[in-house]
Amino acid sequence: MKSKLLSRGALIVLFCLTTGLVFAQDAAEEPMAAIEPRAVVYGEVGGVELLLNVYEPALSDSPRAAVVLIHGGAGKYGERRELAEYASRLAAAGYVVFNIDYRLLQDDGNKRWPAQLEDAQLAVRWVRANAAQYHVDPDQICALGHSFGGQLAALLGERDTLFDTDLPLAMYSSKVACVIDIAGSVDPLRPFNDVRLQPIATALYGGTPNDARETYLSASALAQVDASTSPFLIFHGADDEVNPVEQSREMVDALHRAGVEVVYVEVPHATHLYWISPFEITGAWDLVAPEMLAFLGRHLHSPS
Image 1 (cartoon, helix red, strand yellow):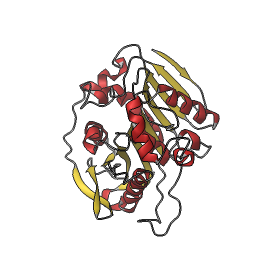
Image 2 (cartoon, rainbow, N blue to C red):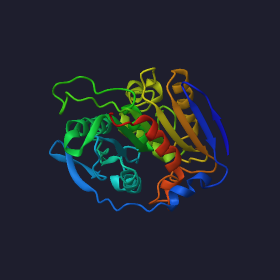
Image 3 (cartoon, rainbow, N blue to C red):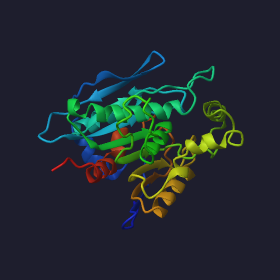
């Protein structure tokens, strides 16, 4: 393993030379607490309920930090169960976890961008509005997403909901304290490695990058990095066959130039679904737990 550490605007780059992280062994040996999720409605759009699963650890004396989980699927596919292992593990570590679904692009073109971002923003506002009920510190919320979910999580760490009194829970902020982006599509202007996904992007954003450039830029976390961006932890596989690893490398560079703390973990030979246990491997949590828990521990602090 090779690592490089810089100070402010910190960049840690970890190149792992095997398919598993050696330092994850301790995390793998810890038993997972059985925390059962509860399905809750966090919003409604056009008569359709938006659902999330809440995972609550044991109560503590102080309000607890929260993590909002966002699944992938190119904006058209996927569901919250894909991140169920992460949800259970993070709850066992003491975080209140909100694992969300959001509107997906329909075959008839309905529910285009930015419906997906609007739902993710609403979910964060809903968590803040219900912070007392779930004993959450509203200032200590992280967004974690894989693939398209990583794109949404990244945007939650960059910009707030535009002020609009017609929005549900408009008095609450949707910006998160930190971001965990796993193989995220942070630059939709860059073509997918899998060209079969390009028609989905064209439908989602209402045209090609040439036809709808402003819409693509509105969905680009890479284009919106600035000094106010929240700290990032980014994971990506060098052999990602869906989202080019260059996206994450460029995101790291942009964050570093802006003076934003970023931790970057790149794994040789890892594919796009390497990180999600229901698909390619079991024990995906053990691959990310050491860096993820350390990052959350640094950036999500309960009030004294």
